[in-house]
Amino acid sequence: MPPRDLQHKEDIDAAQDATVKLAQALVRVPSVTPIDAKDYPAAQKSLDVAAAAGLKAGATATRQAFEGDHPKWDYKVENLVLEWSFGKPDKHICYIGHLDVVPPGDDAKWSDDPYGGRIEDGYLHGRGVTDMKGSVAAFISAIGEKLDELKASGNIKVTMILTTDEEWAAVNGTEKVLKWMKDKGEEPDAFIVGEPSSQDTLGSHIKIGRRGSLVGTFNVKGVQGHAAYQELFENPNRALSLAIAILNSKAWNDGNANFPDTNFEAVALKSGDFNASAIIPGEAQALWNIRFTPSQTPESLETWINDALANPPDWAKQHPDAALLKDVTVKANKDTASAPYYSAPGMLADSAKAAIKSTLGTDAKLDGSGGTTDGRFAAKLFPGAEIIELGLPERGGIPCGHKAQDYLSKGGMHQVDERASLDDLINLRKIFEETVSNYDRNKKPKAGPVAGPGRPPALG
Image: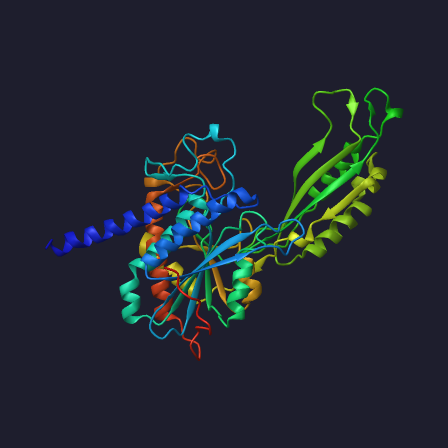
């Protein structure tokens, strides 16, 4: 039998190897959000890989498929629920994650196969490793590592929700699963959303909320004509550019220590033909996006846009194109808007901060910056639960403090050559281990058991 210190090293190496191998296996599945039915089998396969790992780590597994409920984004989605129950559970923590990924774009711009799962220079490469297959692998292996300890002394239920519908409409994913849980009487005390939560360095930030997102369009009808003959055209670009300038001039001041201010951004413009320089187009369009704090709502933002164009600021009233603002048609897609949320930090945030301090020796900051996540559904359906978001660095991580030459231009979430530091994968697993242990040890239990009726059947 090997010496105790050597055996300990072998155990650590085995855990690290399991974490990286699971992340690699997940990355190798091209699980683009199944908007197109042809992508549904790959989405299912990604859940197969996660389910097998969860079963090996002592979980029970339930599959949930949903479709419909939206006039446009009604595609079928499969979801996975993994559950661990230890002792007489008097507290319940739930991890929320997704295994769908955005498309890689032009494969030729990647250094290798986007789904190859190549390991090189201290990184695991591949689409979705940062957002967020690496985090999923870290959490499953974390519970597997803590299995014996939790069986011996734990009184906690751990649930893991994995969807394949987060990167697009999110109609038939996490929200539907959470409603199913609620209908069964499940009431988690706390949620960990495994999304990327820091920029450069693992554990520098823990999210305790996110801004909302409202997307919409401006459409302007004009009259096509020859650019040299002003009497023959009405240029829709003039009204459109002034409208965007007016909305960009708004100085929002609704943020706080945790949330950046609301901001309006023109995302895409569509007008004219670069191969026909003498033709004024007959129509112009803009796609816009507003990221907003809990101080705003989709309805208040739509009202603001319409009021700003109907009653522009004084400088815009003096603009020669001011009269053309009436030609701008505004559409705000309120039905697909993402709501903002804020979760007051409590025992879960304290447990995660202590885990980061123990693992990395650093102090995490709490904030609410970044994009929308499925945390908004937990906030809506379980308003009394604490929510944090904790995952890998958005930009791919910095092994040994050394930034690659292509840092910021490649390697981050949704970027070409997406990657995650192997060190960060291992340390995130350790942070998850300690977070769950800390929470189990220190969270005051509810009055009664948290497990709801009708425990779902196990798979496998």
